[in-house]
Image (cartoon, rainbow, N blue to C red):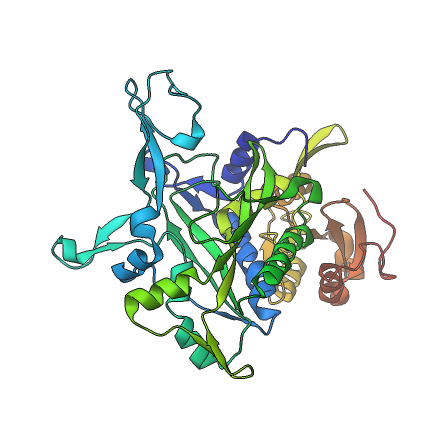
Length: 448
């Protein structure tokens, strides 16, 4: 990470390059609400796809699910969210701002130094109404997590998937929390996306599986480019464990504002299935045919925020360097996360170059997320692609018309090589699979 990186630079880059915009900006915006732009929606989708591939597609012991945002109110009574999903809230008697009690020290307002009220508990769930009349009987809640949708579908998934324990059920979806204090860009917002896995195991094996998933999830971030020195594990103390948790670890990342949670991996025990069985009257025991016994499974839960993960990948990839006397801003994103895989850049808008450039673009589009850009100088276009993290740029010049070769430029090294148009797709595919940039005998020596 560049020593110069701070949150203001990340926010500026995101606005400038179409990653993240303030929501409803033409009306002055809405606090803690953000919209993902053309580049941001691709980055966010890639983060989710990388998680889904790792958690679901590359395993035979995890299946997927997509549950409703609105659920029966009884779900939240059983889970404890109605009674205990709260944060301590303090009001300033002078400026009337509200603060989470754990965000302030003492009894003085951080903003105006006014006196704060005593803490009172504030429920974080958004309440709304289903039906035409706002009666208490029609009160429902926007889900504050995706996990409960998984728990109430446990029996249906077991029956239809015909899989045995240990078995994971994964879900990515929107969650809503009426946070008292938001901020630090997309780090803490009231509307966000969860990537959650509920991994159901036999009681007595839960500690082993907790250790397994802590390592798996830590390694996932490292595999996708986050430096180990910017990650750490923190085990929750007994006094801070959630009411349902037997144990919990946080994977923390060194954000510009300091070490903060990136993902939590909790041992939830049998709390959730036991509660839902009690409140619904449905038997949620699992029958283990091999052991000929019934039991309520324990649950290991890796839970990550998509938006928070996107922010960590952006910060860790951000760099500033000097190239030939000019500052270059670059995102060293893992190729699988980059919003654009390949940019096709004709040297100029000269009509002689356009047909071959369009031919190259059409050749690459079916296999890669490809951008076509012929606006401004080639140097400026390289810089634009560097700022959104595009791993490779393909340049078509006048020599290309004669020898049917194009130039590939690598983002990180800025090295350039010549490749026959007919070999272009195969060469780029090899590089995305990890082949070294200068390993191919097709390539000429690097040039700056």
